[in-house]
Image (cartoon, rainbow, N blue to C red; front, side, top):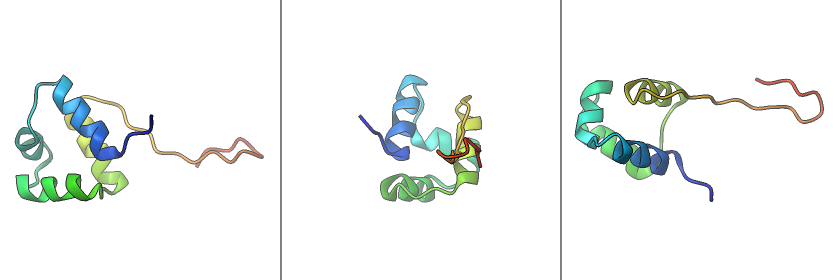
Length: 72
């Protein structure tokens, strides 16, 4: 099963017993702004790294070229 980034964030929030409001404080965004991003599943890679750090998680976003194995 493939989850969207928003779904993954919600799962982690649930496991951390945190609310979106608490996360918004940790990442320095208003609750409404973060809620909008979650509803639209619209995050930059930088925002995802900040969210991961706030949730005490690792985050990796790479492309791997199948023919060369190079990761970008």
